Length: 530
Ligand SMILES: Nc1nc2c(ncn2[C@@H]2O[C@H](COP(=O)(O)OP(=O)(O)OP(=O)(O)O)[C@@H](O)[C@H]2O)c(=O)[nH]1
Image 1 (cartoon, rainbow, N blue to C red):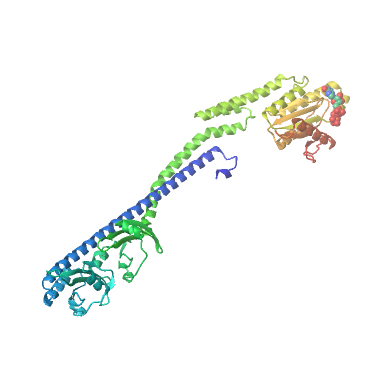
Image 2: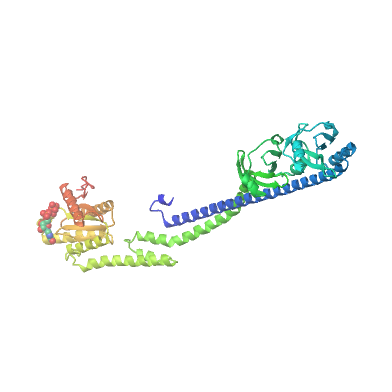
C-alpha cells in the first residue's frame, strides 16, 4: 500500500496509516492466535475425553464379562454334581437367565452337543444337537470361552459365553452357556447404548476382526468396517486417541480394548461439532477487543500527528527557503522533541549559509560600477557555486532594442542613464535568491534558481512589460528582447544553457524585438506590443 502512495504524501498521513495498519494487524493476529490456541485446546480435550469415555466403557464391559463368567462357573460346579438330573439343569438355566439378566438365553449342553435344558423354553431347542461354530468350539476346547459374533440356531446374531462342566472325577460332561443378542435388547445395549452423550459423541464396538458388535445404527451390527488403528497399534496399547478423516467429515476418536474379549470400544465426535463453539468465542474476543483497538488507534493517531507536526511544518518551510522572512517562520515552529529540534536547527543554519553565500558572492566579486549589478566575473562565481551545489536554474538573456539609436540620438550619457534605469527595473523584478548581472554593454543576464521555464517566462514577461510601459526622460519608451533557457544538473554544461538563452534572444530580435522566446520553441511567447 505504501508503495503506491504519491511522493508528496505527507508524514502525518503516513504515520496515521502506519498506526492503523499496525493496529489492524495486531487485532488480526490476536484473533488468529486465539483461534489457533482454542482450536488446539478443544481438539486435545475432546480426544482426551473420548479416550477416557471409551476406557470407562471398556472397563464396564470387562467387568460384565468377568461377572457373567463367574456366574457360569458357579452354575457349572452345581451342574457337575448332578448333571443327569434334568430338573436341576432346568432350574439352573432359569435362575441364570431370570436372576442375573446377563443373558438373553441360557443352555446346558452335554458333551455330544445335545441341549439338556434351555431358558427360555420357547426356543424349542431341548434335545436338539447344536452345530453352531461357537458350540463346537466350546466342546472342542473344554475351556471358559467368549465366542466371536455368530449366528445362533434360532438365527440371532449372538455372542456366546460358556463354561465347561466337569464331574467330581474330572470327566468332561458338557458346558453351560449364555447368549447375548447383539441386534436385540441385551445387557450390552444397556451398558453401551444408554450412555451415549447428547453432544454429538457416539459409541461403537468392534471385535478383533473389525466386525461391528454394537452401533447406534443397528443396521451396521455384524458388518465389517475399516479399523481405526493398525493391528500393531491395537496390540501395543490398551487405549489411545486418533483423528479420523472419514467421508462424512473428520472425527475425533478415543478407543480402549476389553481384555477378556479383545473387543475395541470407540467413542467419537465429529470435529466440526467440536469446533462449533469456536466462532462464537472469536466473536466474543472481537467484541471485547474492538473498543480497545479503536481507543488505541485514536491515541496512536493523535500521538502520530503530534510527532509528525513539527517535521511536517519544517518540510513545508524547507520548500520556501527563498521566501523572505522564512527564518522567522521556522523560528516559531515548536520542535518539541530532539530530532525535530535538530532538523529545525539544521534548516536555520542552512538558510543562513545559503543567504550568506549568495550575499558574499555578490559583494566579493567586483560589481559593475555603472549599475551596481554583478559583472561577468561575479556571474561566473555564481555559476560555479550553482554547479557545486547542483542547483538547477533558468536563465534569461535580456538586450535593449535599438540601443545604438539612443546613443546616436541623445548621447552616450543619456544611454548610460537608460542602462541604469533598466538595471533598476531588473533588480526590482528579481526575487531575493535570483541573480542579476550586466553581461555586456546593453545586455543583461538573470539566473533564477530552482525555477521552471514557465516561471522564468512569467518573470521575463513581467520585466518586458514593465520596461515597455515606462517613460524614460528624454528618450521616451524603450523595449527589451528576452531569450530563455534552463540548466539541470547532469545535463549539458552551464555554458550550453547560456548559449541557448543567447540564441533564443537572437530569435526574439529576429522576430521583431520587444518579445520573449524560449530556447527550443519556435513560437513567440509574447506578442509585440508596439
Ligand atoms: N551609452 C552607452 N552605450 C553603450 C555602452 N556599451 C555599449 N554601448 C552601445 O550600445 C550599442 C549597441 O548597439 P548594437 O549592438 O548595434 O545593437 P542595437 O542598436 O541595440 O540594436 P539591437 O540590439 O539589434 O536591437 C552600441 O552603439 C554601443 O556603442 C555603454 O556602456 N554606454
